[in-house]
Amino acid sequence: MDNADGASRSREERIALNESLCRELNRRKVLWMKTRLPTANFRCECGELRCGRRFLLSETEWKEVRSRPNRFAVAPEHIAPDVESVVKEYPDFWIVEKQGEAEGIAEQLD
Image (cartoon, rainbow, N blue to C red; front, side, top):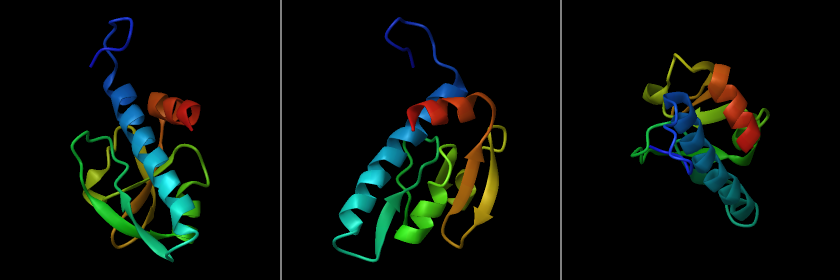
């Protein structure tokens, strides 16, 4: 994938950009949730561009994920151990925390 000036993006940057996009979609879902349901179906925030996994989160669980800008909710088998570590495990999703270049990008895009 190339950015606007034609330079190739690093794997970590592509992962962080995809995860941040999913995080923004989920953030909007929380706003919708507040007026309708106690839980909602959230997108996996992993770095896989074609990932379609979803899982239920409560508003409290979502706030736990969002307690830091470098944290994401992912399906258990969707972790990237070279750029993130598992913070907490739930049955249907895990909270991961980005490290290195991915952490900086996630914080910038938050």
